[in-house]
Length: 105
Image (cartoon, rainbow, N blue to C red; front, side, top):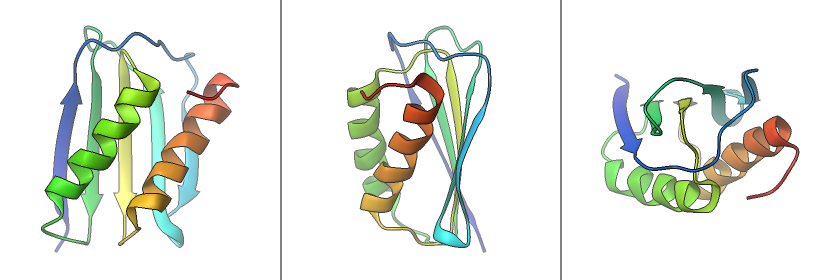
């Protein structure tokens, strides 16, 4: 059974271009990330669907670090996970944002 986790980070500063960006596939590194601009009053909302249940605190730490680096505003991120490590999660998120923005954090 899959677990769904939702996180919301307020007061970001970096806006995204209007096109969506997909990074990775579930069968490659066990993680797929979809990033898109969305009207969220300056927030970044992240939804994770994961087969690895009980790791909410680790997800929160990895995503908090990601948001601290990128400072996203008005962004929605969907993650489909089949057991990726925190390092792969960070890599896929950074890959998606770098492809979308053309820059590093």
